[in-house]
Length: 526
Image (tube, rainbow, N blue to C red; front, side, top):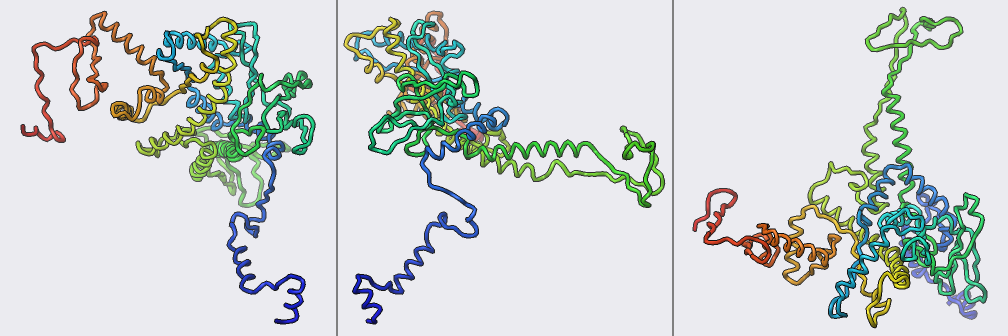
């Protein structure tokens, strides 16, 4: 042991051995490639910030640019319209009460009465009397996607309808993003205010600090505190402890803007290319005067189709060809649009309507994957808009006498019996999907309620409508094909006529057995 090692040991230290040094150097070399800083990544500048810090410095620009794209960019507009169509749909989300006769007598009638009261209020549900509930849900969704968040003010005691209740949307700009009041954890004092949202020590939302009007208008100079019990905030969480929402298009908006500018440049260049231009070039260097008088500027010749003009000796025309449209335009746009579709979490075909390169299998798989994303937004719509609205509407409907609770039932019991049915979708091959649904019901793997819900239908209403049609057919003695053979007419089963369901029975006639032919090549032997 050398004197250097003895000196290090006397103070409790030890020299790092060469193998350990090499091992540490090897660990550095094999660290995450995404964290390395070298000549290829030195311009990749990042900083660790809290979600609220990131949002506060970016939200204004993000929201303004997202709105500008929604107004002027055709792909952004198509995405927002597709979201309205696929998530909300033409009829919105249907309310269904699940009380049965086992719960109390007359449950079916009471369910229908409450559903009718909800439908009555839904016809004109906003304080300005301009929107029904479906249109309000579509506007709520557009605000969630384009602005990043939605604020819904619930007005109790509204004087202009029988339920004394209405909704009023608040522009996210009205919740003051610059109003901050932070404090250290554990310190006594008032609640924190983060970008206009007041939260308690558990980060539960207590109130919102909002302007009475838009900040750009005169009414936007007065700020007031609105309790959280009177206003709902909804946004899609991106990080833990996030207080405000960011626009859905934040990852794709840069490419969308650049592609829009590129499209504009291509259109302008193509217009120039369509306008043929030519210059007159003198081989001798003499100026071609043409019909120009002195001091009239450059020589110009106005030409028309079929017109010819004689040029003097030594002058020849030189045509300018701008080579547009460019052959690279389509491939570049295709790559950009695929990236935009990925950033928006929708399919390329939905975003562009381009069906040239799809087949049955690819479009089916793409639709199924995309609908999973729409289903997630439907869950956000139900939990962030429909359910909170119903929870505030129900007590007001009871107080105003529009509905009456059955004996020994509470408001909470009603809320637990609520089932929301969003819109469903038709399939690429509906016949096979209906067969699959019927087979699942018969085998016990599914139910009528679940299969109807996939199509956005209330199974009770389907049953009631079917019974009404059967009864009307029987009353009018119509020979409709209402036979089910216990399976809804599945292929491969012979239908069994049922006089009780309105179909006319056959009497004294026996139908011949069908002749089976494989691929149309003659009859099978008996």
